[in-house]
Length: 190
Image: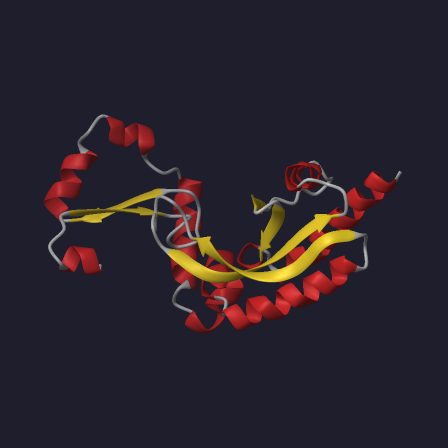
């Protein structure tokens, strides 16, 4: 609403990136401008279906319960997690992974996350990552093997290391991640 209050006629919002709901384009603005868009022949083609509207409605209603919002909407939880919480989780994950194999590098490092290129194109959020690389393997090969695990693990390759940004890993995903790393390391040994 800040943009509208500042005099902007039309604001486009991403339903998934901005509010953590379904993928949807949301248009808000001056009634006269929005009415013009509704009359466009394209409006019928790109309008949201009933399921998307129901999911969007449920997501917006979740914002009324601010106390439990981080439990209800994963995106909100990821974006608002404190760096100290992320560091604690990263250290726990690093210790769990360290016993699974032989590592050239396994450590916790500071990094930055991006919320979404279309929503916040130049905004980064401080974060923490577990950086890991098995002995005698390139980061790109390691990343490829993890992507092909039965439960894919997707990280970022930088500085010849695989970076797992803790802002993108929920507590409930940790066990799956550990299992996937273990699976890939065992395949490499056989």
